[in-house]
Length: 197
Image (cartoon, rainbow, N blue to C red; front, side):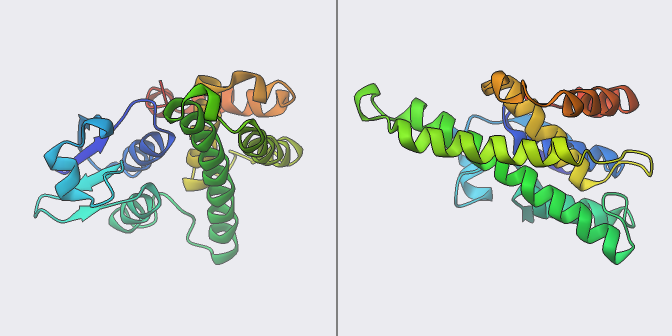
């Protein structure tokens, strides 16, 4: 059975786990502390980043976007729409959600890994601005769940989950997104259980 190296707080791990689950691909979840630089992680991904999917034959797949596309191929388009325009829309949604996560992670790392006197508040504010603009875009054009879930939805739900974990006030101006997330969670509680925590 494939093994997924992941971390509970990571939005990228959540996205990969949800994608594999959506595609009905069985996998073993392996909690991984990246700061400890465990041998299995470092041997699987030279960057030491998660998530990493280790296949039965020893091949490794990283990052979360590549894992989603692997799950999509293995499931016969179970993660992304087959129709080109719908797929493009889903992949663009995924890209924006990833960018939101990138900005939020950069904000967290700036505070976590720098001494307090060296934290660049201007940098943090720029990252917060990126995330706010991304969420505002989705608030103004809330994605539909009527035709089933896809990789873009998973990425957005992961981003919302990570924001709630790390900077919940960033979502205060997004009530429609809150309702959307509730609808996602109601439709797929199995996926909601994999959100960042």
